[in-house]
Length: 327
Image 1: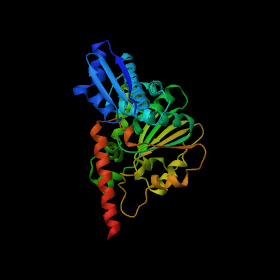
Image 2 (image 1 turned 120 degrees about the horizontal axis):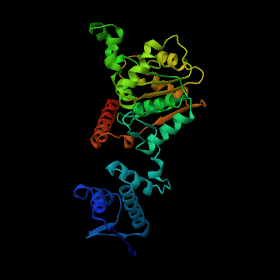
Image 3 (image 1 turned 180 degrees about the vertical axis):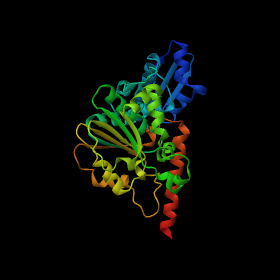
């Protein structure tokens, strides 16, 4: 078969260094995904192989160079996305997709989606009155929902932000903790506080809490209320029962949005209790105005090892389940 060849000249050493990565790891990642020969000589990269493969590799390298020129971070996840898009013949402009600023933090840092999955999640929240963000830890489900809530609050699209989660992890231990009920449940609400502190700044957060414009409370506090003109986030929703999920969803009032986040592989409910999040996927899947975003391992934005850990656990659980079925 006739070999096709392209040569890319990279004149700036700084760009070449960032393109290659530490110990050429970026180039090795591209090589491992395509049946082509990539040869680096001085400031030239020569790509040989079948024409379609050479063009794909060339496009990936050019996209990475553009990212570097635009002073964007280059990491394995970003390169993997470009590889995936070339393999799927996608014409999406990944770099342009992720330029949208969701909100600016109190310190001036811009919060943007980092993966295509995160971008779809943000779009879904904008489009739907109720959005479910379901997937593994580290995909930004809760943090991005809080960022969207703050954005809506600053634009005066809503009057209040309400964040809640079930205190299932506490179980019977609540009674042994010091303080009143709020003191007892605060440790289980800490991830929600952390996100708000980061985006609002502690002083602004406390002022809005004092004005009752921001509320962080356990799910039990939602019973019997109608929540108008609010942005409501239910976190760790895999630990709700069917009754609790129904109770929460029916709190939604006029001019409100709700985002429900959770990971159905991390259910902490007692034996015999069905997860409301697992059930709701089947019950509400066909209702217009409700959106479901299912994150994948590739959307994990923490350390790469988190992806590997989750994959290893999934494989272990699959083998265990397979062996159990044989008995």
